[in-house]
Amino acid sequence: MATAQSEEEKLREYVRENSIRLVDQLNEIRELYDSDREAFYEAMDYALGEFVAFRRVAARIMGKYARQASPEERDEFVRAFRRSLYDAYGGAAVSIDSTDFELEVDSVKINPRHEDRATVNLSIITNSGERYGVAYSMYEPDDGKWQVENVIVEGINMGLAFRDRFEQEMQAADGNVSTVIDEWSADVGDIEGLEDAVEQEKNNG
Image 1: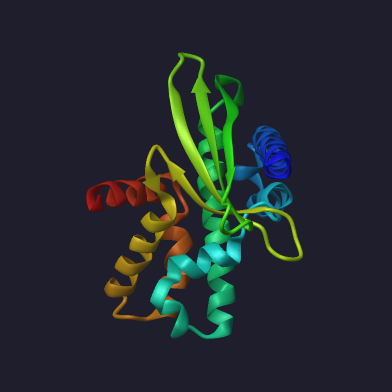
Image 2: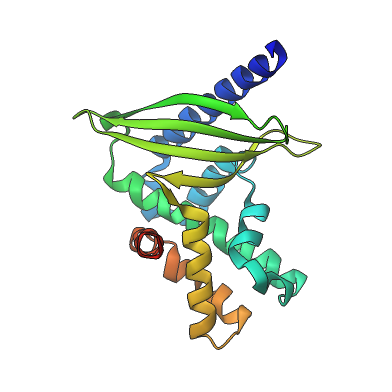
């Protein structure tokens, strides 16, 4: 029990440090979002590159279609999804002042049956006192540090929301994976696309 608690405390601090680093990084590079997008992507890689399991997340979003995609197409989707997520963060950073909210790590629970899985609950508290719940589903690879593999915001499963969007895009493209990947950033990478994914997941719920 003591060992489990110790590991959970380590994970709590790890998530807290990475979350603060992300907020600080966004605050520093927000102007690059419009002036130098490639530099913005590189800075976001520094903040999130090792904290988010992009390849695992991308594979889940593609779902059954990952099997029909070539290795090159799967690699390209990882890149496209990564950038679309950065674009979503960037769009938010332009309009939100990081001093307008605080972030707290509320609880950490490592799965006792699968010690390489954990759930971390966070809260975003605005200056007006509103509180928004965020949950990270985390995975610890054998040869690395804990990584985020899914995010739930106020009960909305973002992984499922994006998977639903990929499914919709595949249907619209008559099953052409390459077309969906090429258009992914334009369709999903902005704040409107992110909101559409959330709204679709709400409707499905």
